Amino acid sequence: MTGIQTTERPRTTPSALLHRFRTRHASWIPVLAALAILIAMMLGAQAYFGNFITPRVLSALLLDNAYLVVLAVGMTFVILTGGIDLSVGAVMAVSGAVTFRGPLSAGAVEGVVALVPDLASAAGSVVALFVAEHLAIPTLTIVLYDDLVHVDFDVVAADRAAEHNDGLPAVVLWEREPISDALPGTYAPEVAAGVRWMEARIWTWSWYIQSKVLRGELYEALDGLQYVRDQVLFRLLAFHGERRPAGGRRAEAVVGDHRDAFARTIPRSLDPATVLASLREEIDLYRVLADPLLERHGIGTGEARTVVLRALDLGLDWTPRSA
Image 1 (tube, rainbow, N blue to C red):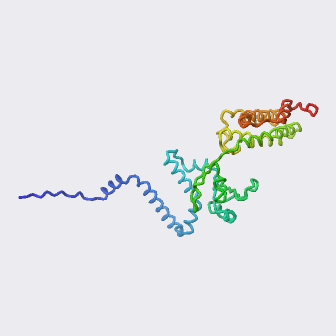
Image 2 (spheres, helix red, strand yellow):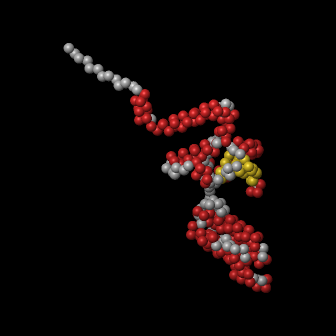
Image 3 (cartoon, rainbow, N blue to C red):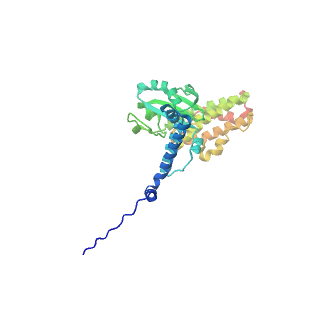
């Protein structure tokens, strides 16, 4: 006789199925839990309000919370690349300004600029919006939202995208025409032309500021100090680091060994002696940063340097007779 041995298939119970699912698909549990909570909340809102699950309400919810989607996507990339896992609130706290740069075909720029107010309003509650006439950039619209997020909508022609974005980081979110290959562009600083331009002007600016101090026009002298710091000293730092000049933006990260010298260019009190001392610090810092570049590029200095330095040495004791 031949015996046939059979094995009894284990009974499939709900608890066994649940255990098998938890074992094989553990990573999906948080996703499914979140989805279940979302569905429960939507059904509860529909039961309470009666008109919650409608296209109009759902569209308004998505528009009002679009920034959360953007933050979540950005944070996901940070986590995937081994960065720090930050909460949405922490990200919002440190992301007070955003620039949206939209490259388009040359003929479409003006039409899109006219649509920016509607586009900005669709992204949230706008409390202030204006075109950047003060920067002479008619295609740049500056927007402030009620949660104090500041967004720049910058519309540029596609054929100028690489030039417009030279040396700046760029992330293309969507493109109809292939422009991403041209971004972010390459930045090659024209150091020789830049330091020649500065050397031709710095001494006139220095005397202008000193003359304002001598006349007691200290607030105008402060404006002059800031202009030199922004247009000359920070640009020289950028030249040395082969970076695109950006004025005082994030300057704290690039001043390096010159941190204390830059701090001394800011007057600690509003009196002639202190303001003039800050001017001396600026000129000393200019010479430290500019003279090696002038020598490297074979650019000579003129008589203006000698005359103005002599006046600066005299300081508050300068008179027309001492010139």
